[in-house]
Length: 285
Image (cartoon, rainbow, N blue to C red; front, top):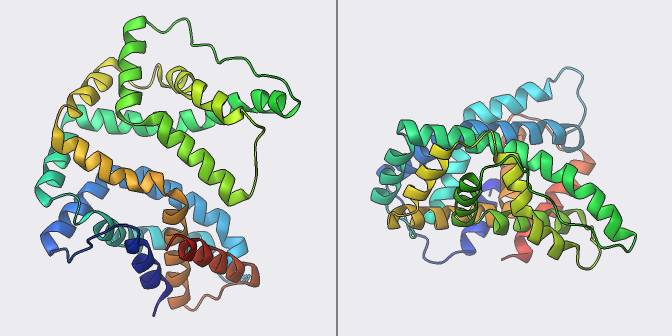
């Protein structure tokens, strides 16, 4: 059995009631994916390019970056669709998906998607830079000070953004990603630092959002969360943010599987990565 099939099967065990998804449902999932496909695919392509030198045996005649781009163009969306169908097919309906797609395909929805993606990149970089000094202070035994909100941000923007950040579970998802990264790296932080980060992440997010997310974007997001079916789909799709380590493992190993079909062999370090990811998935089985 191919590794990708094994991994998808293992991932499916994490949720209950996985059923057969008809073609119409899979088409709806693929349409949903296209709403964020560009930013997601770009991030995955960057990750695969970074992994190529350690995953595969060196071959001077092989353009590994080009192969990673081929995988993204030819197979990544299909693999993501397979994974999403396995996870959400018994949780959300095709009708709910298509209603959300319609909402996010409006001019307001497109603006929100584009600006949210742009803000997400800035937020990630700002968060890394902002927490460096407090982390060093915490490691030295000092209590880091609070992050100060930009005084140029109007109060009505602050209120709207905080509602957006709360609706979208921004702080929860950020802390989940942070903790999963720590677990994967085997690192640790001083006692109390995670509490500091949890208390300050919304301010870091606010400062980075101002000038990118517009008031109209925040208002449209608030409108979206008034629809029960939108909240239902959002909660179901949050599985992928809540399990980034597992999703990353599946995506990376699907890529390794695809490369193997092209006759490209894993290096010894690449095999260790494969074994490590398999271990992660089996531990969550």
